[in-house]
Length: 71
Image (tube, rainbow, N blue to C red; front, top):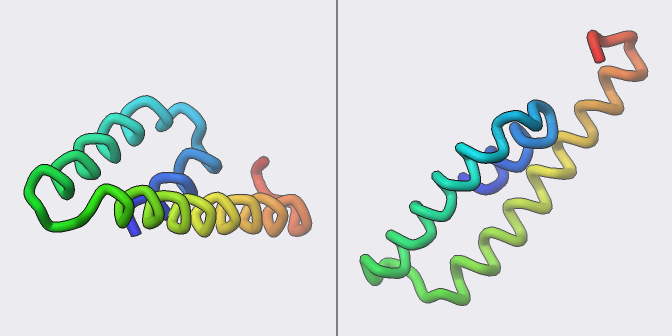
């Protein structure tokens, strides 16, 4: 969920890339180091969540473009 949110925000507001990338890396590292998830779980979750977030951001931009949004 964190990567889905982050990728949607990055897609809509590209200037958030550095801070959200750092926060996601810290969170992913803590999940593995804290023994709450395996490394593979974190990688797959990041990929699936990131893909969903990126798609949501893209769909929102298309929606805004079709309805005369601010972009």
